[in-house]
Length: 287
Image 1 (cartoon, rainbow, N blue to C red):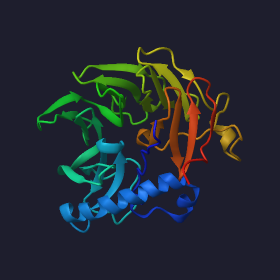
Image 2 (image 1 turned 90 degrees about the vertical axis):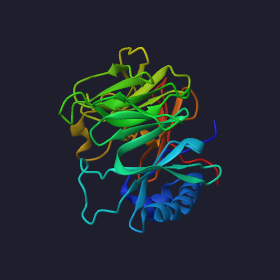
Image 3 (image 1 turned 45 degrees about the vertical axis):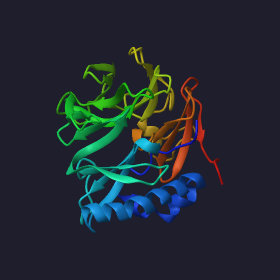
């Protein structure tokens, strides 16, 4: 599989820091810069000089970008992220097109030839190629990650009002929702393998954010990383065995059915073998 990237999920995208750039795979950095060069002028033309794109969702021809109406003057809390308009970006040709001009979405992902749009109320809709929209699911928290076949997507579900009680589920294009993992606290940030059999996600059920693995049938989750660690062990110094969690599901890609590559923040990428739990910083790549 050609290396791709699901990068840039913060307001810092428009001005990648020098420190982060120094830690970034050169190939990834070139792709970020190329995306910025193509998307920034198109966003200004379509939405005005104050608008900024701050997220990339997906890859290749199906890549989407989230646009804010303007960068907030004051720093926002983690639960106060601005809602987005959505544009499409074809990485191969550089073409940019408007998907939705309304600033009402948390996330968007291409699913086959359609686009899944998650609004600020947690309603997930599917926009088909003919422009028609239909509701797929309610009470969706985010972290949309489509199957390779484009027939479903995994996501974080938020069935109640508690922000810190979430589950992981799979949603097919008929709107059927199946919960795959629902432990105490947060289960979130899922990704489904290219063969459609394996789902990895991040859970805080042991008090340290760790990767877990399950199946599309909802098998008993198995902890992959940070086994035996508890949060108090991180207070003074980070243990050498600690594996950082991903920034989000949009920063994750599969290099094979067994190996996941993800952005751990600050430009640092890691790889994870979802069979063995072996994880390591990814320092290689095209120069």
